[in-house]
Length: 303
Length: 269
Image 1 (cartoon, each protein chain N blue to C red):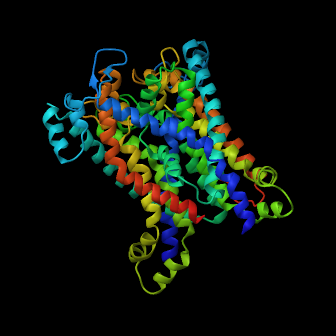
Image 2 (image 1 turned 60 degrees about the vertical axis):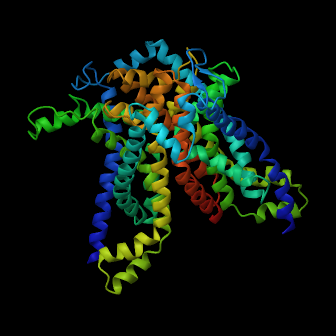
Image 3 (image 1 turned 120 degrees about the vertical axis):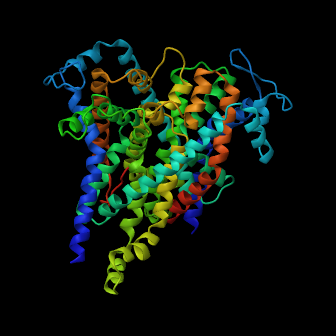
């Protein structure tokens, strides 16, 4: 269609401004992270020597990729603070994404099977907390979980516990906070695929004698896999780098990688180590990021 | 019948799910009107903590800073995001399209500590004075993709024969866009701006990295207070932020309801 092609030419020019912006403020900064992760720590302002010296400086060796560098990395970091916090981040992200899927799925399913006229309202109700501040929602939980907070008051009043339970600064509080904050991220893509599914497919399977559990496993779940994939990635990737929630709700004896990076940067003022930490984190996330990018593009092109 | 049982299960999971999402916020709002200094003891209704906030000049200053950064970054982000959405949905193939859309969508999921750190290193290396503008640039980079996604999904659902008809009738492409396409995507642009604004208002991590001394945003102030424990004044501030965001959402949904001709939901996201 010729009109379409004539329209496309100026439309392409529209890319120039955002393109330049993203190169300047997204791509170029990563080059700086890479460069500084390869330089040495110095007590100066800014706190690094801008020497590009790969032979000296353990931050430089630590940054080098490949199997060898991981050995060096372990060898050079006298306490395995970094390895442990990377591992902890992955475990926390894995566990909380699983919980999110288990909780988010039935709610999204319930939403998709609501009468049509109620669905926009339910959708709105899910989106509103998504718009409300992360920090405020975590703070709301601190109100409830603190030593003489509402939860302990209720438990004491019901005589379920004889003395206040310590909720704050525990892993359970952190998981609660993460699940609470990321639930809309999990529910929205799930709802989007479930609402498009023909209910008659489930009915047909049931008519042919499948039990409700069978219907779910053989029909509903396989058909909703694109939504499951999007929801899982949309939660997993940012949770790995999460800082605010573990910082405010979890104890301080084991850190997630986002907290370690923050600590290196703001408290220890060790910018090269913080940069190297960021690069390793990015490398860990490359695979899920690319996967997410593919899903996202396919979805937008399908519309 | 199996059908009724499933529905009951659905209703239960919906009720529990929404209670989980909303109860903590409702409790926070109620406690912001508590007269007692002790957070846990109910001392009757009062506005004392709101008065406290309006006497706290540091807090007011931070709130003002956040509102300015939010408005500035949301405006730039929506402008650039709309251009990006037009290029991606109408530009067919162009050189570097893959890199472009990759860069555009990456901040959606990129851990904030990485984005914040990398931008700060750029600002330090270029000797930029850190404050209002550095935070605004950082927030623009973060929120542009959200605006682009909202506008792009609207563009994708538009009937392209409208633009083509305008051009067949003699409009040049720019005119066809301004006269036909733009009015149709205005609701999405408004929704994109509001999403960008609330995201900027919300951000702690990137602002912490990119701001300079003496120009803290509201989340930075709230965070440093919260680390010291629960204070009733923070409840009041949070309630006001929630109120502001609620107004933004209501306006956004009214705008999209009034202007969307097809009656389909131009839901934000």
